[in-house]
Image 1 (cartoon, rainbow, N blue to C red):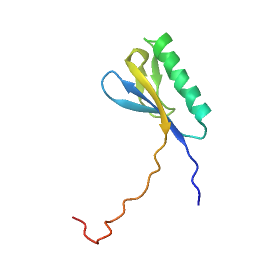
Image 2: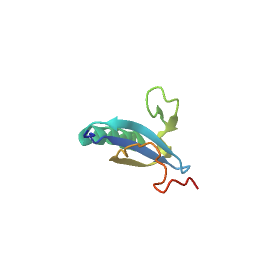
Image 3: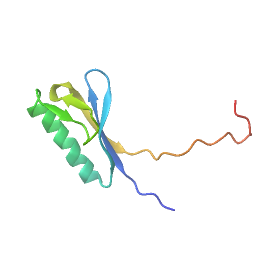
Length: 88
């Protein structure tokens, strides 16, 4: 079964924290559009408060954004036990 590549977009804050602003985005172009929106917010609306993702409850001020990152989403896999049978 082939898995499709998805992208995620997150912002780095001046506090050192990170917040996702987009996950499971199908194309690179869509991810870039989201990133460009957050770059514009950081540049043009430094005093504005913005929710990172709809319904997330995470609100950031435009001036707190230090960087915007786009990357391929890492596939999540269940933990597998070691091959030798030991757990420690």
